[in-house]
Length: 598
Image (tube, rainbow, N blue to C red):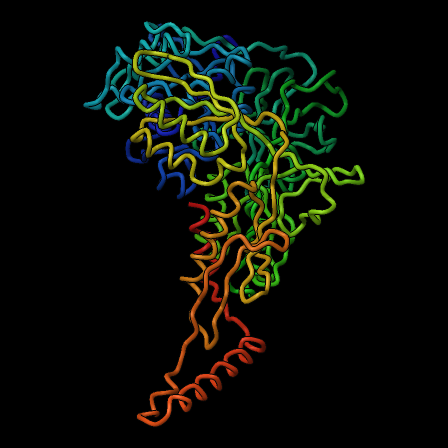
């Protein structure tokens, strides 16, 4: 165990984690020069195209130190986006140390600080690394100062590297061996193995990624999951070296994979503890938490004939992504679909893109919402995330909504604009911390439901791209949320209903009405489009009717003849409006809901 190092790489999004991991793998001989490609540990096309890590992954490397000793390095590459912080938390539980990467040009950002606190909560040893020092905008000394003031770490222990050119990689490997601790555990004790991730293989079922804390695990062992209570028999164990490499056993301190005939990720819980059935551990590994869905949205197929295909596609995605939840839903306008729960807006975008790309299904995605707690006048408390389930306003006593504590790092000259932006999104309390020279942290308590709608995009605009944003959910607070319905020709369209704070209701309703007025083609009669709260109309747009010039044939004579023709046309239009049906094209829903999410 003295020659094992279990560590992960944590950082803000786009600070060079994956590139650093690639160079560590290449330097340790984990991949040949011919087989090398960028983002080795990122398996999805979306990860490669966007340049982000969505799902954490692990690899075991052999490193020969300058003293001639060979070390086993178990590396876990983690996501950097706030939506996937639960992946980072699970990875930290499987590690004894971490490389905390800071971009030499961008410096310490919000998610860097958040990941630092996560690592400190788990008592991990941290090794700071300054990446991208080859960039023209790199300022290593300024970043050392930020590491000292913002992170509280030794700035002179930070290792400057350029993962692109390979400069400093040997120093990082030496630092991992010398400064990060070896794992602790009892190889002879009862088995205790922590499941920090899982992936699905169509031939072998679920492949569990585990860190063995105590004991040993080998094929043929009868195992028990301490949280879910499932019992299985181990078929195969081994380590990941880009390809699966079977071994005789996994001992205390090692990280590897376990195959036990599990058919679906939903049969187990990521973060569970594995022990032997005949010699169980006294207690599971502490720190287990379920992933919490915070954003909810309905997904419908554009073509109703693809409903079964959508159901099968969600089943296949959920096999690999245990944090995606879904249940059947229906809409009078859009037909049958599914109500899905996501970890955040990026998670929603990734799932939507994977459904469209991997399964070739056209989708309509409803406006995202959060989960509200509604107290009724009879004392019952219900949770509502779907506007279709919103109770009658006369039955509601009070409503509470989830709040977040947002941490925003920004240049000093943008503080005023950031605070104004937070107030625009109903910020409750604001606090300012002055960090390094020219850098300020704004801490703000805000409703989660507000942040869903382009807060991050506007933050980047007002800070000229230098602002960064991280948040944690805190509690539920009293609010004045209403259900806004959209009426088209006096008929409500359930797919366009949404929940919003009363102060923002009119602005969004007007936006919906204007978008629909542009997207719906003109008919032979006038079509009113209205936003309604209860029985009160708060916004309206009108699509004018096609009109025939019935007076064109009147080239003379008394004016009463023209009036008679116009009155006749007016009666015909009124009758047509009563019996006519408004044809709403699918593109109208797509354009309105897509624009609403921007």
